[in-house]
Image 1 (cartoon, chains in turn blue, purple):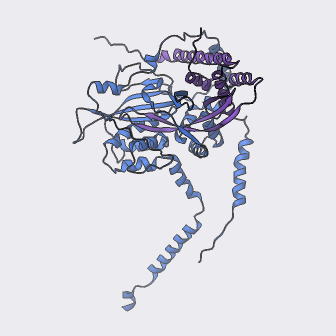
Image 2: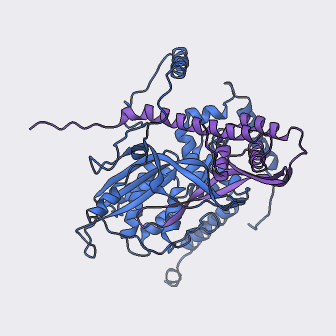
Image 3: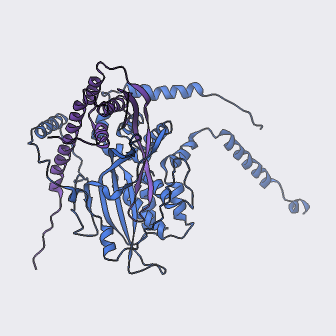
Length: 372
Length: 145
């Protein structure tokens, strides 16, 4: 059976595309506005921004709507869109100590510098499905908005910088000489994984960037594999800082050569403290891993911080490094997975032919059997 | 009393100004003036968000941020703006407002007034946010012996 080139299916593909677009437009419910998605589905929007590697809520919401709620597909749309845009440059490096917190907890320490601020979190909401009457719920929402508008103005002069920008637990540990100090005067240029894919042997900046835009589920799964699975690179990790807050975006003003803060981005930040107990480690101290991602995504940032410290402790060239760099990107993994749906007619036919030949070989009498 | 602000601070506040007010102010600045010369943009693109993390005090790229920037010449003075998001009208208007103040144009005071309002609005928003957050601060009670 020879190889015969074939083409076709274009009309069917176009019809399938139209089916997607038309069904989206002809939906039985009212059109979903972008501000509704941003306002009501914030965790999904944040996840799309983080995995898409682009901060812009409107773009993320647009992608989420187009992808009909498929987060990985949304992130793919965002990355594709970003690749069409020019890059104007790089922001001035912002020190993460500047995070203006909306939520900040320190599980390791009861009285850290600054408050234990629960903020807005789903951690304490009962996991019971809320089934209100829809009309009542709409009415309640309107009433709540009206009541908020009528509230008296609050004192804008009250200084809150000490609680909104608190010191961090790592500095407390350093003061107590309990933390390995890995700071150095070197300031290497950070790797740009959008231009050069990170591969084993990559610097830590590439690893952190890779995890910052990794698929959330992939990072959590890799973290869990290292806790309960066969890898076991994580042991006694305690969380230091868990923060959700805003970081300023600063660029150089081209006409006056001064820094200008053009706005801010929301981020989730985590410090993971590891108890050092290896034979070559200083057992009198802790070491710390770091996680940071766009938006509010604590699971991802916690996994990232844990994996950062696990990788710091792992041997060079470890499986963990390969796992983080090569298997946590949602576009890479889902793209590879989904390509399996493409026609593999020729590949599979060659496999069938090999099986057939194998079978004929097995059925052929051996030389010894013929001789006897 | 309002204190004259630096150009950098003005650009920050114009970057945060509500679009409609910004457009109205820029339109006023252009009233009776020739159209501004577009030196660049308004262009939508990205800037790479770089952070310095606390463990090794090293830098890494967190991701890109969508921005729009514009440079204009208005009243023979260059004005510049960068605003977050896909916002060509806003970036163009902010650059015109920037140039208006640098050129000491007739509407410079209106631009500065807008900046003062934005600054006050930011403070009010931040204060109101803290007012809602503050009750979630954990206050531990020592258990008696």
